[in-house]
Image 1 (cartoon, chains in turn blue, purple):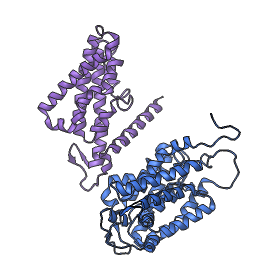
Image 2 (image 1 turned 45 degrees about the horizontal axis):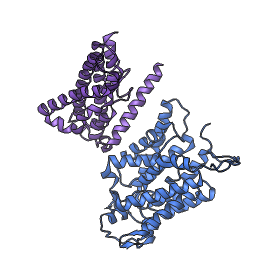
Image 3 (image 1 turned 135 degrees about the vertical axis):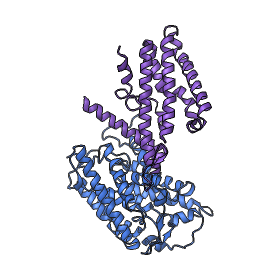
Image 4 (image 1 turned 180 degrees about the vertical axis):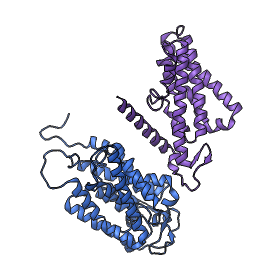
Amino acid sequence: MENKLIVAAAPHLHARESTARIMWSVSLSLLPAGAAGVYFFGYAALAVIIVSIAAALASEWVLQKLTRRQTTLSDGSAFLTGLLLAYNLPPGVPLWIPAIGAVFAIAVGKQVFGGLGQNIFNPALAARAFLMASWPAYMTSFRAPGFDAVTSATPLSALKEGHLQQVYSYLDLFMGNKAGCIGEVCVAGLLAGAVFLLLRGYITWHIPAAYLFTAGIMHYMFGHHGMFSGDWLFYLLSGGLVLGAFYMATDYVTSPLTAKGQLIYGAGCGLLTVVIRLWGGYPEGTCYAILMMNAAAPLIDRYSRRRIYGTGKAR
Amino acid sequence: MKLPAEFLKGIIRQNPIFVLALGLCPVLAVSTSVSNALGMGAAATFVLVGSNCIISLIKNVVPDKIRIPCFIVVIATFVTIAELVMRAYSPALNRALGIYVPLIVVNCMVLGRAEAFASRRPFLGSLADGLGMGAGFTLGLALISSIRELLGAGKLLGYTLFPGFKPALMMALPPGALLVIGMMLGFFNLLKGRKE
């Protein structure tokens, strides 16, 4: 019965929400973005998603059996981890990559720490970082939309290497007609899912807003043609920023609890993402930025505690 | 005191890496390949045995207040011998291990055994302890490095085992060492918990 509720400071209210309900709702809200990914990249993308989810569920079940704990497949957290991992992979990877990644996400990213609610890092992102460090050649070969499997650079990596051959319209970037990871390309689909989550109250606006605002301001300030000339809209619509801001950074377990803490956390994610994108070795920094802020989340929680009702300000 | 017991405890029950968690710096650094690990294990064992013996012999003449500097001088002597021998007879290994050979001086395992064991035990017991700890360190290092070399390069002792295998580069990088050591520490704790 543990982990059924989100622990927050008093006062408490009774509601019908449960971990399973939230996890399945989040998975549902990811459906449009995934459908768009499959539409643009074909069945290879669908195969990656299916293998990733199956491997995540299987490793969760095996590990919980091995450690003689109650199996919690039905709470949807392993399904969501597998789904998010697949969304963070290029569509053309060999299928053992999502399989190994999902096993790593569940085993090393989650169960080693004691299961759902105990993990320090977002399991899907930890697995992505592991795959990125282990098989960089597969993880950085993207393909252009369409069924022909033509390799292509993502808008961000082309820009990093200094030659953006293809001019992307904002509409293409928004709808997902570009090279990239399966779930990150269709910003429209992601935003549709995010609106659903915001309306249902499963995520609050604090982290995504702070994240996107900070990243946008930073990109605007540090443009390629001097200060305050950056094409911030291009950068916000490219790469995994929107997926990261709404779905990865808002993971309950690895983000701060209070509104103030979440604003600091989101701003930190935005700052680090832009620093990595513009001055780091990788074209995209969303994954590493969120992982680093995951590590800082306990510290942020410590310094953004709410004042306990009835007590004065400490002097 | 039973000498075999003093020797054997270092291998599993008080393994310096997995149970005492001593000397982890070289373990993280040189466990990328089995040959490096064996070289480091041999050098550390030599220093450990030598310093344990000398320190247990001089323990009664060393004033308590300055014992740590005295131990360090003894340890540094053996490290210098090990380094010069390695440089003369196995320059390739010396290059591969680099700064980590001189750094054995400040390896907490060597000083730890000197302080906790050799400075208050007789000569033979200290010798057995040094040998056992050295053997445990070498075995632990060999185990970690074989896992890392196998997963990170697809090789063992430099020989390719599975030609079609795509090695996971991360296991050859520092995070791989931390992951493997963490898993092994957890495994040893599990064994300890089962016994008790």
